[in-house]
Length: 290
Image (cartoon, rainbow, N blue to C red):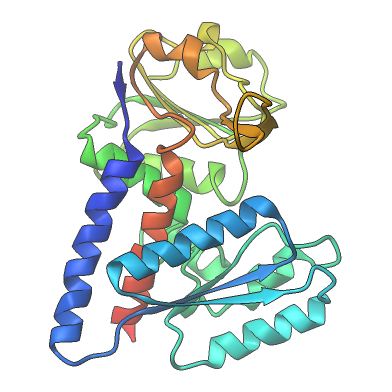
């Protein structure tokens, strides 16, 4: 078993981007600017945005965090998005999800200018991805593709099961893995809570990508010997033995699954850092397009 180290790979990507930023500075040009809108007080969202700010500082990007009250109305948030769409100094921005229940998440996604949609969620960018056209790829699926690429994991002709069908991870992940590219060219099955014979299907996978949102859902008897397992899930569960009072748990029962795998990610230092690195890549791309 080899651990897929997202922390190390994301550090390589940040170094590559930082070198390009240094060239921009040396030429007297402005640097890319990423903004994040944070609505409410969700602890995980606050931590994630804070990490994005640190990433920007490390590589030399400018960053701005717009904090909005948890009682912010949908109209107020949409007005802020419109303002960011028109701000010439902002190359790309995200609205950190989830948003409070009074706000329609789909309206938020549809309101973001596709040229600044560095999360890769808006219909135009998703459509371009489906057609194989230049676009901003969804950050988590693209981060996983980059991880597979940098570990030179063979995907062509392999059976890939994507467990989960969300618009943010599962569906775009399946599209990217099936495209005529490297990595890619896999035969892909999307599985979900209504899939019959789910255990047997997962056990047939050469590559199993798990984004189902259920802690330790994938157990050892669901994994093929020698499979590559990518765990997208991350849930905080109480743990009195930890100073923080919690621990992060993935969608895969890591301790009992790891010895069956050729490669596997761990819940921390796996997919998360690669998602953030992909966001930085998209922001640089947005800057370059302008």
